[in-house]
Length: 130
Ligand SMILES: [Ca+2]
Ligand SMILES: [Ca+2]
Image (cartoon, rainbow, N blue to C red; front, side, top):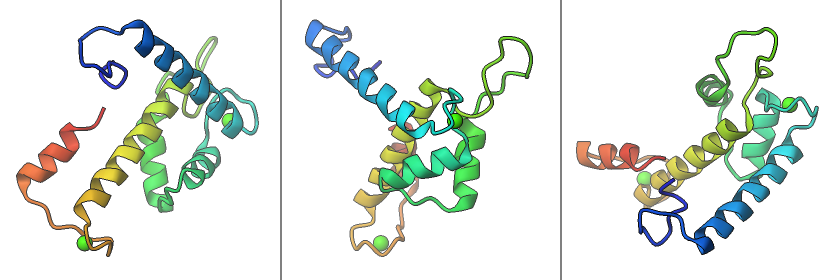
């Protein structure tokens, strides 16, 4: 819950709760918007459209990796989640893509798409993810 505990008090106060609620409402709208076939989950094409809309043009290979990492692994059957990425996993996927891209952008100061980082910087970047 650290991303919502804005004053770092360790608990979520009312203002933070209101922010959290607004945040979830916004995400629900985003999710509904991109769940074009209203299946209740995000498939590969929908994920591509969502990330492209947010300004992240991932290669097809990376999109498959994101999909694999965040799609549900529950076996098919009665009451099983629909195939694809569920709401909470979709939020997580978007936040991780955003944070990784921002971390990269901060390190790629000359904006040529390449970075050279040492072990500490690499670990800091990865450990900074939600
Ligand atoms: Ca869908
Ligand atoms: Ca660079």
